[in-house]
Length: 272
Image (cartoon, one colour):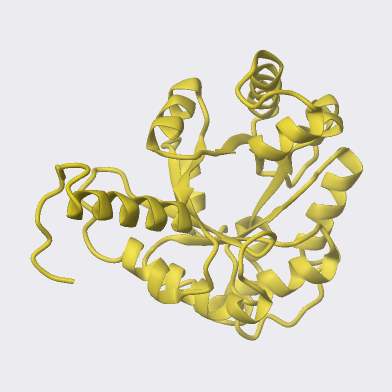
């Protein structure tokens, strides 16, 4: 039996799993975005809790995982590095999945799987006192313990030339669920222009390798238009934007309306 987390359900249904990047350590921000009827027919099934580059550290994990999980979305924690203790801390705080930066080869991938699973499949240490709290309806003890090896979603980021060159071997590693493309680091580490021919060729190779191995392909996007392009391209899981990007852009757009530089097409909010 596998825990039916939001991200698992979305990916198993072969529907696109939409998510966003949370860089601020705020349950209020996460719940404001996730709570209630969103209007569009699509909804967010996952949130990337960014502990690599954001302002989030592991003492924020528990509350963020619980706030996201309570809104029927999956918290996926991006740990700073693919180390066993970092992955363990994220999962013990209630992450439905983990994401690790800079997966360069199949050895890296196999270690990430090992760190994410209890024995006999891996080496994750036992102590999930708080982990089930982010999974409504899942009881602590055997119900969590016996199903989480199959229930956790393991995402590795392909964002280097070595990662691209080894991507078919990485995709073949048992226990890897998602190959996630970090397009900014990928372009920088390859020394190519983001969006240029070589960059796009690498992205297409990663997408093809994931699908050939029966795995899911995911990518970070800068906005809805970028995300839609990747959905059409065949990506299974897309991050549509970041919290801070939306906040800044929206605030500056409203400032332009206020001082007469622009007109607003948005409906009046009538409140806070």
